[in-house]
Length: 359
Ligand code: NAD
Ligand code: GLY
Image 1 (cartoon, protein in one colour):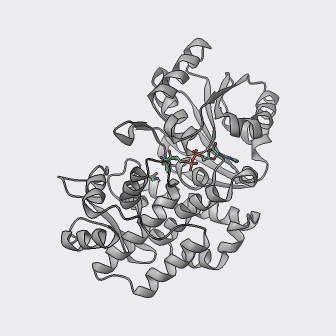
Image 2 (tube, helix red, strand yellow):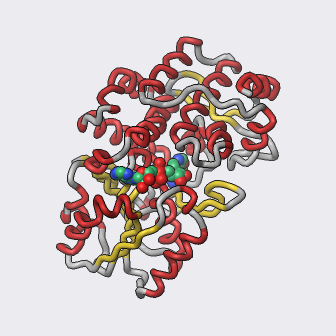
Image 3 (tube, rainbow, N blue to C red):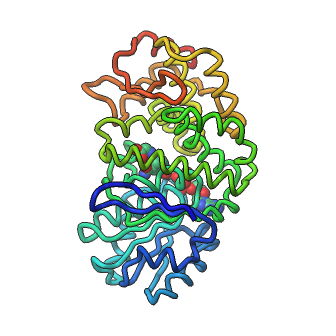
């Protein structure tokens, strides 16, 4: 088992990565409060993994109840949150009770926001079961629900007590979802670690084939890069925004597909291609760098040709980005593979030209 730490002073917490951790009362025992716990999950994930987790929690003498929410991004909303609050109150959960998120990023984000706000904050544990949640959403304390006018518009920074990553759960994950998570893994290499990017280039077939050792290394590397960034800038006043590489374009693509056409990672992959081309227009990167990234994304099973939305729609949707400052869209671009920066002094005409080429 690998153990990392997100360093945030008194709110620091461990990230455990390994096989069989779901049923490890040793790991759970280190982080679970002794009062009762509510496991928020959905029917799909719950039917696969709740029983194992339940046995481990009961072995610690802690009462545990599952709460099933509807599956899918469209249920990451106020209605589901309200349902969770109703159950927490009805079943008498108190401040020493734990909320455990068992599932992908949707479950993690909404359970985390419920934990942040119920009785002004109760202990929370993330047990992510998608690759995307294991390498990104479960670490760093961003919790949120969507509003009909925008994604993740209502939320809080609220750090978990621990993140428990059981890579065994990836065995049941559909290939398309694995690819979606790989987009975020590739992102870490692009923004922060050229050597890791080269490793991904050489090992992508092992990752797409679900090889345990390769997956473990990619998850460990991704989590440690994210932990380092979050430790430096928990509330995204600077460096943390680099984690949004490909996302400003990607969110526009995701919204255009009404969150059903493209998975998050697919939109990020296409958004990354736009960000790379924009970086080139700033005088950074070679064509060969851009093509190399395209090859890696493709070998991860990801799309690399952004949809034709037209520049007006792209710009309108990109204006909703949380990084927009004084009406100006700020872009995360690359100076080189492994070196990202935030730019607001790009040439608007170049951006419009790029988006109209796509549109
Ligand atoms: P998801 O939670 O919708 O999971 C994808 C699908 O896989 C779902 O149908 C789910 O039920 C299923 N699933 C989960 N684990 C499984 C398993 N082990 N085996 C089989 N099926 C399984 O999607 P996601 O990609 O995990 O997360 C996307 C969400 O994460 C979005 O809402 C996004 O906004 C959020 N997100 C948050 C952060 C953050 O920092 N908080 C970062 C990135 C993304
Ligand atoms: N997923 C981006 C972040 O956590 O900041």
